[in-house]
Amino acid sequence: MTTNPVYPSELDALLAISSGLNAEGGNERFKQIMHQLLSDLCHTIKKFDITDEEFWVAINYLNELGERKEAALLAAGLGLEHYLDMRADEKEAAAGNTSGTPRTIEGPLYVANAPLSQDFARMDDGSEETEAMWLHGKVTDLQGNPVAGAVVDIWHANTHGCYSFFDPSQSEYNLRRRVRTAADGSYAVRSIVPCGYGCPPDGPTQKLLNGLGRHGNRPAHIHFFVSAPGFKHLTTQINLNGDQYLWDDFAFATREELIADPVKITDDKLARERDIHAPHT
Ligand code: MBD
Ligand code: FE
Image (cartoon, rainbow, N blue to C red):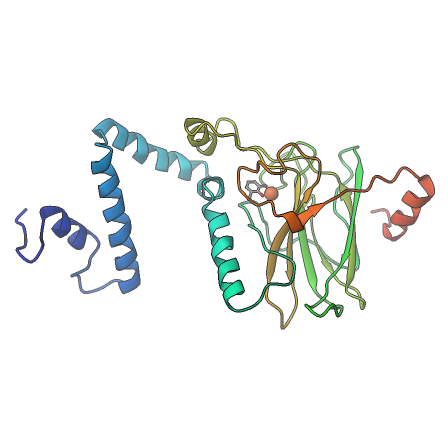
């Protein structure tokens, strides 16, 4: 390869050409981003004097990540998905918007089109005999006015920390429901108390975390999307207080305002009252 004299070095020439800076087609923003990324990578290779062997370990790792479909899981574990929230928060704060329920990451385990019902849903398929969990709340605007007809899309893990669709042992849409809020903005679901999630122990994400001396666990949590016409879509979660990983989430999603203190209902009568909206399926 001959070095184009307009480039200060052979590396500069390589990076410019490989990222298509002087090619006709393609997308300008994409070229600039690729140029930066490739440049950062080459500088890392140089700085750490990366060996050929190390290089091919990394390339094979990418294949493994794809084969196991764990790219999004790794993005969560590296804090990159949380960084998107940090940036969004910064922009909201700069625009003077500081109220409202805080957002936090979606994670890699959402599945669209969960069964949709009005006011109430039973989320679990009844296959796990474990502690029942009632979640209820009210969707309001920033002034506290109820938002009727908002869609609250809820998903969470079972008692093994596993999610339907990703865990073939569960029924379709188990622990995934959408509920439309009532006239007063309220919604309620009956489900089961979830356990925290752990990365697949034999998977590439956990392998990388092991190399960093980190665990791959999340505290028990419940995911929410909240949407309504005329309002910004909200992606958030609640964490159940008391979990050992509450402030040690491998995906950095815990926020003070999103910690829920579960109330244990031991009174039979109260439990029946809570269940009144829960017709048997
Ligand atoms: C999860 O359940 C989750 O919410 C995230 C962010 C990452 C992995 C598993
Ligand atoms: Fe999750």
